[in-house]
Image (cartoon, rainbow, N blue to C red; front, side):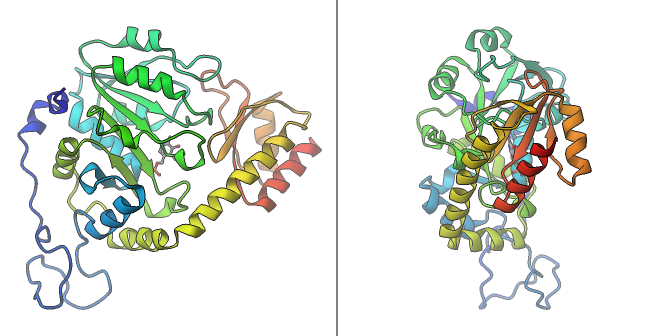
Length: 344
Ligand SMILES: *Cc1c(COP(=O)(O)O)cnc(C)c1O
C-alpha cells in the first residue's frame, strides 16, 4: 500500500516554506543570527523556536520508544486532526466516517474543511459495529476516526475490532489515544510499522497535565510525517511550550504518580457513584472521567451548577440519554461531588 496515494493531489507536489531558522535550529553562541528579523535583545524568547522541535522530539522519542521520523507535534491534537483533514480530504468530494457518540472535534473540523461526515453509531456497549461502518464506506471515504478510550463513553474500543477495521478499511485510520495513559489497553503506536495507513494521535493535555501549553502528538508512517512537516505552520510549537514539555518529561515520575492517583480516585469515585440514588448506571472507565446515567440529566446538571460544580451534560449525544460526564478531580473535589450528589 502506498499511503501517499490517499493524499490530495496538490499536497503531493507541495513545496514547504523554508523558514529562516530551519537549518540552524539550535541557537549556537558562535553564530550571529541576523537572518530572521528578530529583536536581538534577550527576552529568553526573542528567537523563533525550532520548527521541528528537535530537542523535545528526541527526548520524547526515547521515552515513547518510537523513532523521531514517525513523530510530529501539533498545537494541540486539534491542529494535528486539522492537518489530517487538509492533507487527505478534498472539500465537497471526499467524506469521513465517525463513530458516535464520540469527540466533537472530528465533525467540527470536517465541517470547517467542507467534508461530508458519515456516522456509524457504536452499539449499546459503546463498541464499533464493523458491518455498519463498512457499509458507509465508498471510494471517497478517506478517513475513519476511532477514539479509544472513547470520549464521552470512557471505554476502550476492543483491540480485535480495531484490528478488523484496520485490515478491512482502505483509507487512513486515525486512532485518537488522548486517554491512553489511563487505559488498560496497549497503544496502537507500535502498529505504525506494520500498517502504513494508521495514524495515532495523543496529547499532553490529559495525563501530562499540560492542557494550557497546547501540545498534541501525531505518530504515523515517515512518509506521512514528512508531508505534515511540510504543510504545518513552520513555527507551530512555541518555545515556551517546548520548554515546559521538556521540563515535565524530566519529571516523568511525578506525571506517573499523578496518573496513578487519578486512577485510584477513579475506582473510588465509581464505587461511591454506584451508591447514589439519583444515579441509575455508572459505566466502566478506561479514562480520567466517568460517564453516568442519572434520573434527569438536565435537572442534576443544573443542581450541580447551583452547588458550584460544573460537569459535562451529554444527554443530547446518541446513546447518552440522561448521561453526565465527570472528570476525576483531586480527592477533595471528588468528595465534594459525592457529598453534593448524595444530598439530592
Ligand atoms: C481532550 C481530547 C483531546 C485533546 O485535544 P488537545 O487539542 O490535544 O488538547 C483529543 N481527543 C480527545 C478525544 C479528547 O477528549
